[in-house]
Image (tube, rainbow, N blue to C red; front, side):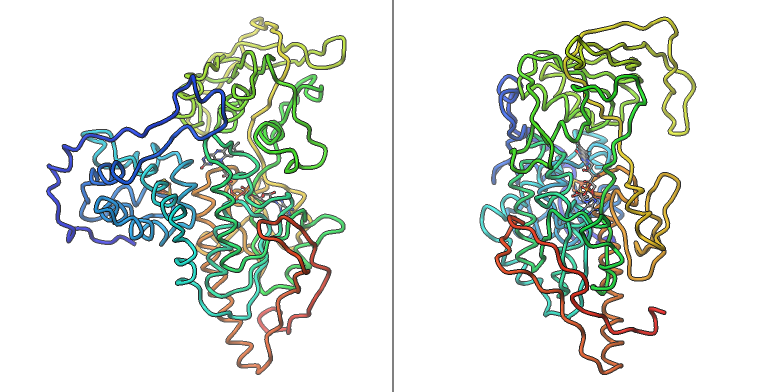
Amino acid sequence: MFEITATRHIDRREHLLIPRVPVPKQPPEQRIFNFHEVYLGYNEETVKIEAARCIQCPVEQACLTACPVHNDIPLAMWHTARGEFYEGYLAFRKNSTMSEVCGRVCPQEKLCQGSCVVGAYEPPVYIGKVEFFLADWMRIHGKMDSVLDSERKPPTGRTVAIVGSGPAGLHAAEILALKGHHVDVYERHPKPGGLLMYGIPDFKLEKDKVQGITERCEHAGVRFICNTTVNTPGNPYVEDLLYEYDAVLVAIGAEIPATMGTEGEDLPGVWKSLDFLISLNLQEEMFPPGLERPDIEGKTVMVVGGGDTSSDCVRSAVRAGAGRVILSYRRSEKEMPGREEDRGFAKEEGVEYEFLTQPVRFIPGPDGRLAQVELRRMKLGEPDKSGRRRPVPIEGSEFITDVDIMVLALGFWPDEKFAKATPGMETKRWGEIKVDPETGMTSRIGLWAAGDAVNGADLVVTAMAGARKAADSIHEYLLTLSKEYEELGVEPPKPPEAPAGLEPGCAQSFIVTTPARKPVKLDRMG
Ligand SMILES: Cc1cc2nc3c(=O)[nH]c(=O)nc-3n(C[C@H](O)[C@H](O)[C@H](O)COP(=O)(O)OP(=O)(O)OC[C@H]3O[C@@H](n4cnc5c(N)ncnc54)[C@H](O)[C@@H]3O)c2cc1C
Ligand code: SF4
């Protein structure tokens, strides 16, 4: 896993003296009026200087170990510092097909950058900012397709169905399609991308980057089958997919919102975080059925929760023109799990924080809509299992405040209904799909799982790490299947037919009709 960089000779002391190159960004007074990305990014000159700050640690580079997909960061920095952006990108691409995303949204201060040895003396190398510069540079210079063409292997005749098109599904789809397998991705939303499209707002990750990834997948041969909720009536079930395809990967994420069980939680004006984010960040034609954009201009918005989602909600509310935006969290700032950088940005953008408070009641006005919230003050008690100090209610500390819109950003669970409709696929206590940690295979032969559906709500990069393992294991499995077909002397079955007129980017959707073909029964399938 670790490439020895001792052969890349540099004067480490000299490189340590290079000051960090700040990344230009939109000032708060400008960015609160738009949804564009905060960071404007490096240019070809500044990125070289920042990459040259890497001191090329000789072995067991800490950044590489801390990166969940083990990107060869020193090699990428080496090339970038020399202006070899193509080669720099390829160093990242070896392990990650989504540098434009990870470079923007990974909590680098806890991962690669947090372990960068330069950080012991000076600010660490801005690894993420260099990473996304390289991916953007490749795209702007039209070099992605030639990379794909050089990586693509001849068709194997093997077929894979992937359920879910978030980072886990997309990463596995691109890897498997380039290995020559036919890959169909089933997605319940009108567009592919998962939470990259229907969650993370533009000011962190603009949608054209996600669109670029899905187009790249299509160029690699992946077919997206959108508006198709697998394991629901009128749509294919995993059972059908296992019948139609050689292998199936479940990458459905963990998108069932946690609830509070608080009085008034169902009032109009109380929003689930994902609905709120979609309604403010996407165009209406991309909304799931039944969703409407709230009237937010001048209103008081309160968001409950301490993770990335709550930061995204408050910052979206600011940009949508809310009069006052408050974030309520039941512990103190120190215990907040969300990214510190986003919190800093939110404060700069005028978000107010109410730490150590928890809603206990949502109160309707005369029109039946949410008008007020009753909050209770909390204090910190003993640490819980996560090591964070437990919030303890202070009796008699309740107070009522006016609020127009309340957003619940309390975390997410995997979809247990999906698991229940998939016979033989075991789950863990909180509904996470059980997999072999080495291969990502579930308790059912031919069925893999990856991403938040396995990890619980986590990170883009950890979803990708699981998807890579699953894709490698699926590939091995498909090669074995091919050999078995060869030994049996039978013609491998053809992939399901795609209807005519399927547009790139999932503009049109279709449902594969039930069993298009029957697989040859192999001994190993029992
Ligand atoms: C608001 C928000 C902000 C976040 N910010 C960050 C961040 O800054 N950095 C970071 O690293 N992580 C962040 N995350 C977490 C990150 O987005 C997830 O960990 C990651 O997207 C998980 O990838 P996934 O592919 O497993 O699942 P998802 O991205 O959830 O994708 C799952 C896909 O499966 C589809 N699906 C579900 N059920 C079915 C079905 N039955 N049939 C067909 N399709 C189905 C869904 O529609 C979805 O498209 C954030 C999450 C949220 C909610
Ligand atoms: S994938 Fe994430 S953790 Fe790994 S190098 Fe890129 S930004 Fe850092």
